[in-house]
Amino acid sequence: MPDRRPTAAERQARLAAVRAEQRAKERRRTVVIGSVAAVLVLALVGVAGWVIVDAGRENAELEAQASQEIDGVETFEDLTFNHVTTAVEYPQTPPVGGDHAAAWLNCGVYTEPVPNENAVHSLEHGAVWITYDPALPADDVAALEAMAENQSYVLVSPYEGLDSPVVASAWGYQLEADSADDERLPVFVQKYLLNPELAEVGAPCSSGVGTPA
Image 1 (cartoon, rainbow, N blue to C red):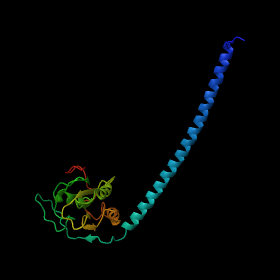
Image 2: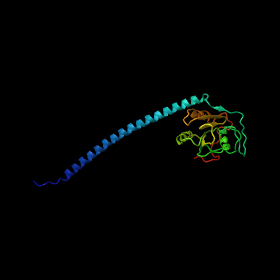
Image 3: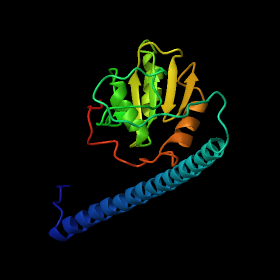
Image 4: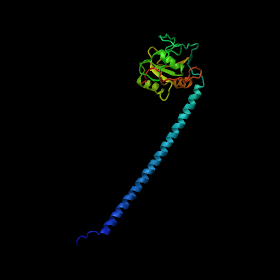
């Protein structure tokens, strides 16, 4: 029996059926993708919400700890505020205040030691200066540098001759730590950053001298 070619009407009907099946597959795929996307969105919203809640809890805990005295913090009084053009011999290492250069040090992370006299001026503006032994492991240094992220008034730099591996300083206050993961360090930053006791608190910690990394 000879083969019969499909008529134009049959071809149109077959084509319509194929297109209908393709559209059905597209709809099923769209539904699947949409469902997966919805699940992902809900998951991301849930994660974001958890992160926000967790961050809020951590900040509240940090503020509560900062409202109390911090064990090991030394206090220094009767610090002078004079601007000088010469090097200054400071009684603390690193210094926590006293006579200083007229130009402040730009806040941020430094990979080389910075001038005491400029850093002290930044302390007068409310900065916290985190210094560390240059031999500190790279992971520990990275943890300290992370404390300067999103902070306009934090200095981080290596410092030769420290009595402890890590020393955090603010104007008139200092804390020595044996490691970068000392839980008192972020509390110190929270407590003394932009300390309202200072006459020049909030003055710039940028547009001064120094180029952070």
